[in-house]
Amino acid sequence: MILHSQSHVILGHYLGAGGAPAVAPDVIFGWDSEARQRRPNPYPVHEAIRQRHLDPREVLVVDDLKPGVDIANAAGVNVATAGWSHHIPAIRDFMKRTCAAYFATIPEFVEFILE
Image 1: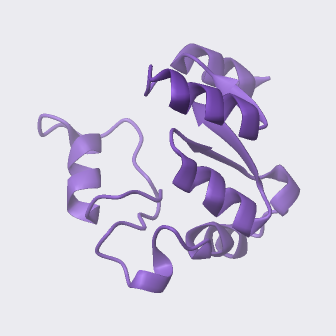
Image 2: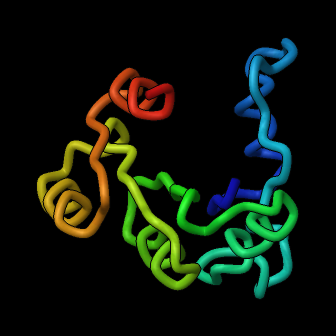
C-alpha cells in the first residue's frame, strides 16, 4: 500500500475501532518511509513486483488521484481509478481519460477482480 500518510495511521484505519482487521496490507509504504521509497517514486510498485515475483503485465495500481497514475506509468504497470473516492468532475474526467479502468463503486471493483 502506497499512501500519503504515516504507516501507523494507515494501519489504524484498517484496525478500525480496535478490532482485528479483516484485511490488512502486507507492506505499507507510507510517508514515514525513506523519500526514495514513497510517492511519487515507483519504488513501492517495483518492490512489490520483486518480493512477490509478479509479472508487471498482471499488476494493477488502483488509485484515486494523479500521483497513482504517475507511479503506475513510471513502474510500467496498468492503473485503474478508485472512482468512489472523488466526485469532482475535473478529477473524474482526468482519471477516466488516463486509466485502463474506472470503478465508480467498490462492488464494481470487486466484480472486476473476481472475474
